[in-house]
Length: 312
Ligand SMILES: Nc1ncnc2c1ncn2[C@@H]1O[C@H](COP(=O)(O)OP(=O)(O)OP(=O)(O)O)[C@@H](O)[C@H]1O
Image (spheres, rainbow, N blue to C red):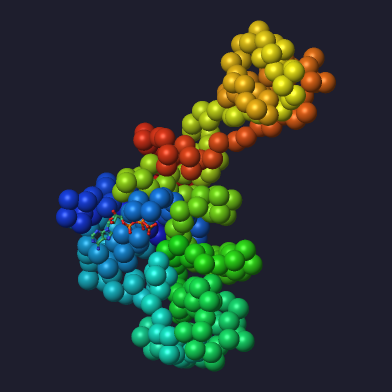
């Protein structure tokens, strides 16, 4: 069996009375694109720092490519990791070329790698400009180039798309996919599920330092009985007739200014449409609104779903 690129075993980390990471266990397979999602303060950045060995866990263990962060040989593994911190520190008086050369020397990467990387992240034309004149998106691109130095085997990217415009986000994921094509494993965090849910292989949702859920989006959706909201748009003169027909079919609804709204089980969609068919002329629109996983897991749900991923 192929070795996991990352293994977390019941990892805990406190800051004073605050349990920032609470009994987190998960695995990430080589080559996987794995998302960490959670509100502000959920524990995402702390988890990255623990995986890098920058913070020590209070209990539990973390293995990267089979090597414990507590082990003597972890320094060698660290060299194969690219890290983009949430707030990348850049020196305003240096140009992008000088900045990247500085990080390249620190990492022992040949300086010839810098210009192609700046071109890859879309900064070739601004390479000689002082970083102090850069926009937030440009700074983020430069931070990403820094993380890519030395073609790391593992990329840990903390909120990598913060400050990027839609084109920047598109470019970012294109580069991530190119790296993955060469076998790189990528873990990235975000507090916006909508942005990453269609892009990652699997994701973990953190809430209050705990793992609220883990799996592919399809697995997470299938694992919970998500109700579907339905909006029936119609003129006020039809509301009573519609409500009575729905009640007769066993659907409770609420009257709203635009029409009626109700929540139904997914398997009841067909039955609802059948009940509405004779009343089609009274309806201006029928809207099905899918609940977001984010709302379910980060807002209302506290039970956990166990790791069902292939690599588990
Ligand atoms: N160095 C520290 N000292 C004290 N408390 C800390 C420290 N670092 C993190 N925390 C606390 O640990 C919890 C988790 O913080 P963390 O930065 O990991 O969350 P996050 O999910 O990355 O949030 P954000 O999306 O805002 O970056 C928070 O309550 C935070 O206040």
